[in-house]
Image (spheres, rainbow, N blue to C red):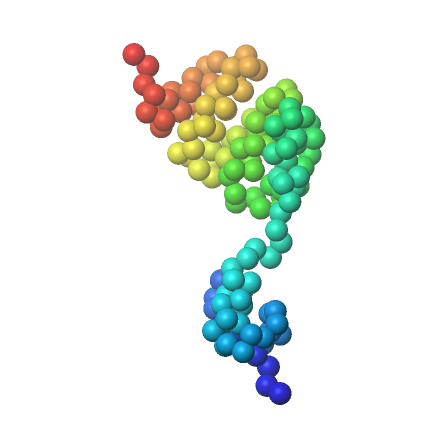
Length: 150
């Protein structure tokens, strides 16, 4: 019996044909099975549980726990900014200002137009008593967000 062939996403997102078992019970209609395969291929490989994102800990104001969970997530997907920003906020709220600064500088380096990262970096530097270093970041955050002082 010939294997069932369908499109799947290969390395670097290239579409290619590959063999695989049919998904679900056959209904007798080939278009139903093709639709099932497409839906299956569009699903993320590993669905992330809410606890894996650290957000519940952050919402509960358990910033140390959130930072521990988010550190693993940021190591896993370093190109995503949302987990990095939440990690920086967790560090900030748990008064780990050195780690906050490091994380925010990496965010600003990756995405110079991220106004919230500039604002947080400015506030972090102010909290460390480094107002002269904070001023450019705070001005840039205001300019990027369209919030100009009167």
